[in-house]
Length: 150
Image (cartoon, rainbow, N blue to C red; front, top):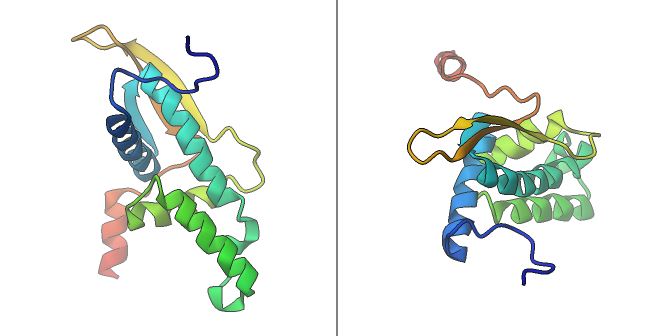
């Protein structure tokens, strides 16, 4: 019996699941929305909500210059970065999480993601879904290139 056991196994080993959700979380933060199966989207929601909460719980410390922070505030920021880094090992995606995504949800008590059910997949009839960050529009490639030219 699976009493008090949280999370779906999805037919994968624990290391495979961890790697899969790590990659999916990074893709969701980087792109703002991804398409996957419904059970994977529901499990990914739990992980991404925790990651965004690590960013939003810093509050106004995200806007402060590190030179102006007290040692306790710096330690808090480092702790939050390290906790989020467990699931987001890429530094560029981690900076997107703390500099772009987290400030959008400052003052919001959860509910950072939306799951929209889609059609069934053609090959195996699996239910698909789109999971997205609410209100987050990632920068387009053209905008990034324009900033680099100036």
